[in-house]
Image (cartoon, rainbow over all chains, first blue to last red; front, side, top):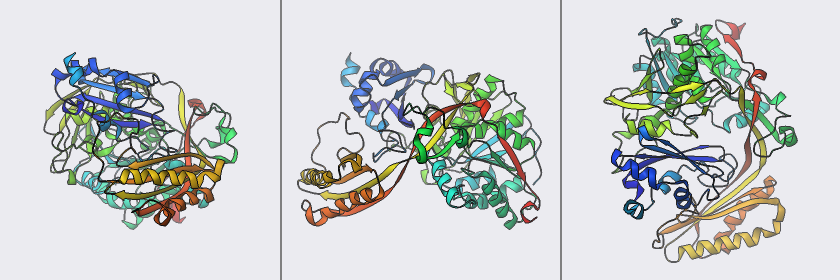
Length: 105
Length: 459
């Protein structure tokens, strides 16, 4: 089971900061997302922000999390050399996360 | 076109729609909204972070340039229906030259036989003359240290200029840099007579603006994931509109017969789009608080939005500072089939060896194989079979144009002097305009409104 089976997600950007929302499809899955998707797990999956640069905000009434990743965009869309300078693709990369171990905890 | 009353056509509800959510947005859905939306306001948000720095350069080369290159096309497309239906337009397509954009809009209106159209130019966001001492967040040094590399400085202004233009009867309001939600908040403040310190309503109006500002991103665009999140008739997706009441609560919807969908899911994704702390969304007119927002599906493609609030504005305006940041040189070449990853990697090694003599003229570089590691090189991925094909991409920030050109030429050189079977080279070089961030006290930024109407251009 991947995160993709449980949630949908969208990436936004401001300057050199990326933000990724993760939203449960079903209210029943919200407690698992809230418990499992720590800033550390998100940083490891994306290979970004491992040095404590991931902040997490929760909106329980919408079954939604918002991850803010500082310094994620190689200087930001205007000067980054990256192909996807906005980081638009990052939410889908996060949805590849394998949830099996976390669901058993 | 007649000047509308302060309230919307239906009294206690204002209908406000999105005509564009970025500079290159589709035009047909805006025309549909203008014709069938019974809108009080149609808002076009077309200005990205870097756009205004590019526009400033265009204006330096030509004093009548520096506004959105699609302005005339968009205006020609929607003005007849907007005039017929009494829909007022608000847009930031003025970019670096709102006055020239207003003159151009008046010219389009005259061509269309709409000579009575009142067009307002809102200015005051250009703060290049006073940005020098302000410290840039990215460098920790004053903007003045950029010297001749400093291109532009534009403050994200609030809704006051737009409100003033609407109070003066403008049918079309054209500004430059303003906060995106302010383009929507301005008409709501004007239409409902909200006070500029009514933080709760300003927070709610900001939410409406935030949800609408990216056009189809709330009606099923940037959303489809086949088999999981399917979007009906995406090819004919409609743009959104909001029905807003006096308290600032709203229903987000779209026109019947258009493609796409408006659901709790599309609204939740857009609610958090480009938001950091949902409880503190910093805006020039208010610190909006979205942390308690509730979304309810009340009908097909109808989502009721409530629960936003707001707190007093910080008194500081964010300023986008554009500066010359070297030159980009880039090239790509494809490798496919057997051993393609190894051949692509060899190509990267060759490029680095051949460009090494340029030394410090290359400030930073990035090499990748598209199809393997171009998007998220550090991401955790399951082991996979060799891809069917990869595309080598090499990009470098260079000190000057000649070096940047040479980067692309070296990629092209891989045709005859690189690994076996490389094909499909593309290359480019261009100047990089970087954007840095500074803050200015709001009291140092005054907005001005200039109304153009009647025969002023021919006088």
